Image (cartoon, one colour):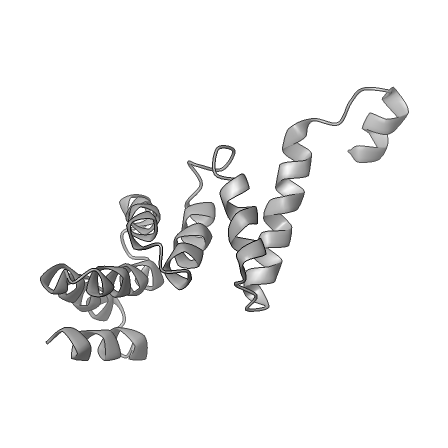
Length: 131
């Protein structure tokens, strides 16, 4: 596609650069790089990928890691709106809520995760910290 655009003389659509940035962010997260530069990369993509569950999952987890709990909650709730059985989103939302002192809500998300995956260690540990 890029070669075709170059040969045609037409400018590259901005979305191509943003998709490339999304892939870089995703790759960094998979390599367990969660530093501020990756968080900033995610924030720069927010307007383009606001309706993407994958983007919101990655962004929500980065916000959680950086202790931006209300933003993490917002992003992870978005994921669960469309992917009700996303156990990782449930567990991570449980952790965000626990850190904000909302223990009963956190407990319900850990229990929800365990209802889908009874052997989920992270959900068991989280539940143990709110009981």
